[in-house]
Image 1 (cartoon, rainbow, N blue to C red):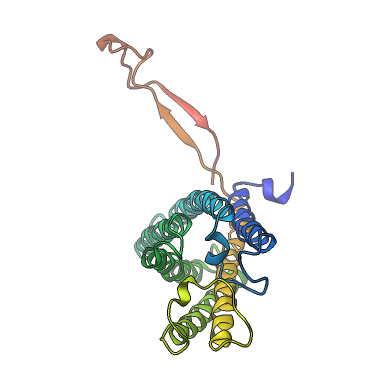
Image 2 (image 1 turned 60 degrees about the vertical axis):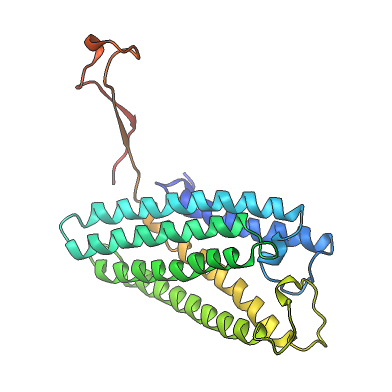
Length: 266
């Protein structure tokens, strides 16, 4: 059995690989069609013009589903490991809520392009990266509270390092974007897809785009830390049959009829 076939480790693997592919494929398409500059464009700029916009949208929608599934499995795992620790359980529920909010933001980014509905796109980015960073913080705190009983110290330090990486990227992107869009370098820069190195504002533009790519891959790196944990978990669902047939017959109901759909254990 391969390492990614153990337990549910394929979920974070699929999330990371698919999301990275969505960035790379849309970037390559946009470069080949000369829709953006080759040197580090905004990720959103690579999904602005058809056909890469269609590819970008559908692939990120799949990433949204994979992200929600991964976060739910993580939630169930922590709940199963610490059923009698109220502090951990509260943080765990908070983490799931924040994580799903972040996934909703990713869905907004995928379906509302930057050059068409800018403010909605920015709202999606704030949910994805802002709320997503808080999700990373909550999971890092959970890792701290659960070590060394359930987590090794190495996992905690790895998640803390990735969280600090994402925070530094957010800070860098925020400051450079504020400077770039302050009006000092012209108007309607949001619609600008091609930049000349000699133009005013090129330096903060590059700092902002590099920070965005760094932030995106810090998120993907965080989910890589789930792989070892997910190798030790599987889920099961129980189907409770309310009757022996699908007819609306009073005599057909049997509350005790149950069947295992997927067997497994934590």
